[in-house]
Amino acid sequence: FTCIAVCNSITWNKAKPIYVDIGDDLNIDPDDLEKKITKNSKAIIMQHTFGIPAEVEKIKTIAKKKGLVIIEDCAHALGAAYKNKPLGTFSKVSFFSFGRDKALSSVFGGMILTRDKLLYEKLKKLRDKLDHPSNFWIFQQLMHPLLMSFVKPTYNLGFGKITLGKMLLFISQKMKLLSFPVYEDEKKGIRPGIFPAKIPGALAILATNQLKKLERFVGHRREIAKVYRDKLKSTGFRIIKLKEGESLLRFPVLTPDAQNIHESMKSEGILLGNWYNCPIVPCADESVTRYVNGSCKNTEDLSSQILNLPTYIGITKKDAEEISELVKKWAK
Image (cartoon, rainbow, N blue to C red):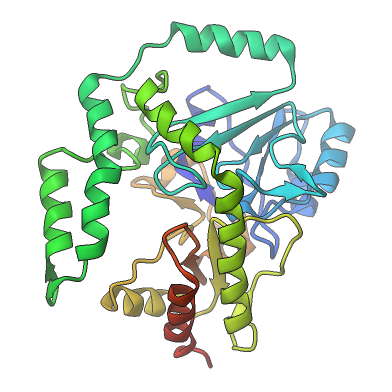
């Protein structure tokens, strides 16, 4: 129940990903994890899906017993906590994403945290040897927030499927004024030539300016999540149990009608995320992920039922209430 960027990072390093099923909290299932550890296992990647804290203590106990390193995947989880301690601080090393749809955005990029001094020095040397991306690539990323500020308000302004926002988005992508969040090569398991690279100063400024607002962003996400929870708790939908310290990047709702609701909302001009409508996304060639169908039954089941409701800073409580009412029309 993850992004292809994670398994690509493993296979590009000549290692083999072993997939563990998820529990009802959409995070790694400690029981299935223990079953799948072998003498060849080296590390556990502990993902905090949508900013929901994983079963940290159980996974740490398993890792200690088996002599494995934990790598914390906090791509969704900046600002979230477990027992009042920030996620990303329960392991030897953790990584965060500053992608265009994350807790804070520099459009591309991210950060690595470690408490290990030797690893820190090694990472620093690796970073210092990297080049910056091209000036045109930086320009593309800086254009994203600018162009999207015009695309979003005009996305439904027009007649039927032909709208001003859609035309602006199409033209911008055709003229390569915008880049895509995941490269086509990545979907095929091929590393794009641009990566890895240093994060440019211009994008770092975007990230650090938002980092100052992180507490407000987290508070906002929790308020919006509360609206969805209150509005949808008495319906036939399955709502993920509230976890202390969570900061939901998306509000997950489980229903067999997920795909139909997704299409219905799209017709209303509301674009919902597809995280994760199959075990690994986005993927043009399943064989490159080395995932074996049937090996994670709960993941396959839940990924066919997942609906993601937006919680980002641009969504107001009124918006969340209106989205909830549209979704409730599908309640059984």
